[in-house]
Image (cartoon, rainbow, N blue to C red):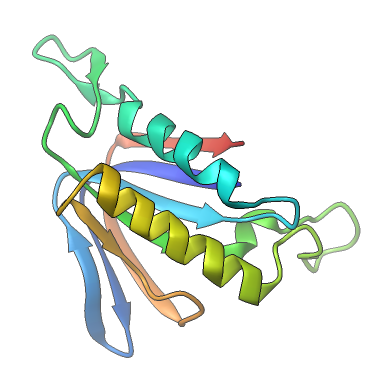
Length: 146
């Protein structure tokens, strides 16, 4: 499982011109699953995301997590996190989880996120052509893999 995490002051996902998820301060998380992933990776990744200390304290040091700052999380499925450019110029996605399995894992990820951090989770729509807008705060962008 791979995630690209951005600390944002705001972010939104639009599908067919309509906002389907939006947050103010918090984390925009692009989520991808590899063919070897199963549901055992979900809780450890969510624990990591919820405990990431990337929000500034009063002295400007990264000491707070999304829970500490009462932030939200916008979760967006993105199989292209498993794109490889080792050969040529066109990405290969052979490392990505098949769509039907990825959808099941993404749905489980969203459900577990909501259970662990109630009423603070927004999401995109799996498989949709999404337009994501954000204001990266920092900028802070991290890549996580389990």
